[in-house]
Length: 123
Ligand code: 5GP
Ligand code: ZN
Image 1 (cartoon, rainbow, N blue to C red):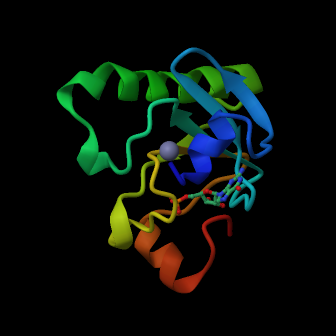
Image 2 (image 1 turned 45 degrees about the vertical axis):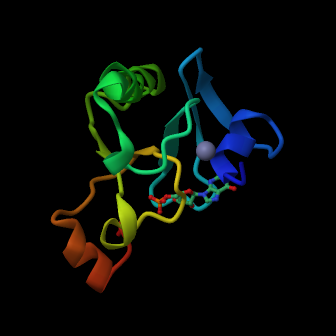
C-alpha cells in the first residue's frame, strides 16, 4: 500500500519516533507548528476518521491516552497542549492514514479557522 505513514510504521522511511507499542507509534512532525509537535498513529491503516468502525473505538481511545501519556512524560501535561484530528479537505488532512496531532510548548490561539486565515498556528 502506498501510504507514507505505513512506510514509517514499517521502518521503510525514517522518523524521529518518540513512543511505540503494539497498537500505535508516535513521532515528531517533519514540519512542526509548535515547539513540540508529534503525530500519534495506529499501526492499523485507517484512511480518515470517517473510516473508523465501532471495533476501532478502543484503538482510537488508546491514541488519545497515548497523547496524555507523552504529555506527562515530556512534562507539559500541566501547562497544557492541543490534540487535533484533521479529516478530509476542509479539515486540512494531507496524509490519509489517521493521525492525532499533539502540539505543545506555547499557548495556542482559538478558534483555529482564524489562525488559518491570519497567521500560523504557532503564533
Ligand atoms: P495532516 O495535514 O494530514 O493533518 O497532517 C499531516 C502531517 O504529517 C503534517 O503536519 C506534516 O508536516 C506531517 N508529515 C508529512 N510528511 C511527513 C514525513 O515524511 N515525516 C514526518 N515526520 N511528518 C510528515
Ligand atoms: Zn497507512
